Amino acid sequence: MRRTPSKTRRVRPKDLLIVFGVFMAGPVWAEPDADALGRAMNYPVGDGSQGRNEAFRVGAWSALDQVPGVLTQKVARSSQAQALPRSKTSFDIRYTYRNTTYTVNDYLDRQRVTGLLILKDGEIVLERYRYARQEDARFLSFSMAKSVTSLLMGVAQAQGWVKSLDDVAAQYVKDLEGSAYGQTRIRDLLRMSSGLTFTERYDGSDDVSRLSRAVATGWPATVDVLRQVQDRHSPAGAKFVYASAETEVLGRVLTAATGRSLAELTQQWIWEPMGAEHEAFWCTGRDRQAAAYFCFNASLRDWGRLGAMLARDGRVGDRQVIPLDYLLAATDAARQPPAFRPYRATAYVGYGYQFWIHPFRERTFVMQGVHGQAVYVQPASGIVMVHTAVYAHPSGMQDPQPFAERNALWQGVVDALGGSTARY
Image (cartoon, rainbow, N blue to C red):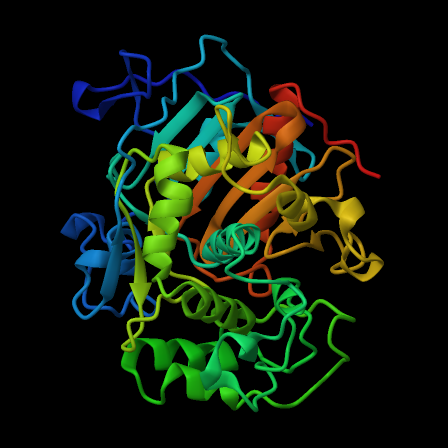
């Protein structure tokens, strides 16, 4: 059943805005729950209670460096920004969800999206900002940061700072000597397959909440929380079980191995060669260690540049920024052990080196964070979709609807832009 198009509405001048790249006015589409999200207060950054107070989420999650008490480390923009030209081709993007066909505008009417960017072969097909966000907003990635940490690990290995992915973490992080995580191989941490029990329910009483409180307050020390994880559910390397602590250990391996902060590594190894347009930043704990598992912040376009670089298999121009073999090991379903492939790691997606892998015949992977953050990439077709949001719930465990509809939108984007959604 096809959705009946809405009737033409008269639009008042004050309801007009500039739509990306096309210098003409168009209607302002509905922004779901805008009042609850702080519209009347111009979306304030608040006092750090955005997890509990939705009125602060839009403001805080696009300007976390302005929230009182949050510690950050800057990642300088590139000395030469990589162009993101506007596509001269018009695409009719539609998607089907629950037997009804929708447009992108319908999607934005239905979901709490703060930013949406669609690229084809490095050109902007669509760019939207919502809830009064602007181009220079730096959006909190949540667990998309895990994929950034993985990319840094790939460069660290290629440059010899990390000798082997089969080294154990304590070989680099002396504070983890004698602990279960310290004796876990880097490769198993990348696949979230340490076999150690770390709960991640997003209910405030789980292990990830305890870890995040340690990062925010310094009590107990973050490394002490990591050392306390000892119980085992599976042999190391045998099974994917999502655990943010494993990425936090990877971040500490990187800083210990190189003697540099994650912010310095990100600037030197990714942001500068990628041609980032805007300054980014990492949030840090009280020990000044960047929270590798959730706290990288960047503009929508720079998330798009990162996705476009990955769509070009880690290249910018003639430069191989991310080692190709590592990137394929991180994102190619065929290179994963059977237990980590789509339909096996989870009921639908697979898991590589801190990337989610879709079950498409064409290599397709996702950087993904709670509350709706995602960067989708299909290299063969050159299609990238960046999606930032303030979903009410962290994950599909609490409410699967917005996450399922976002995946449906992605499939519609791929179909409209000439990619492939055929599954194996």
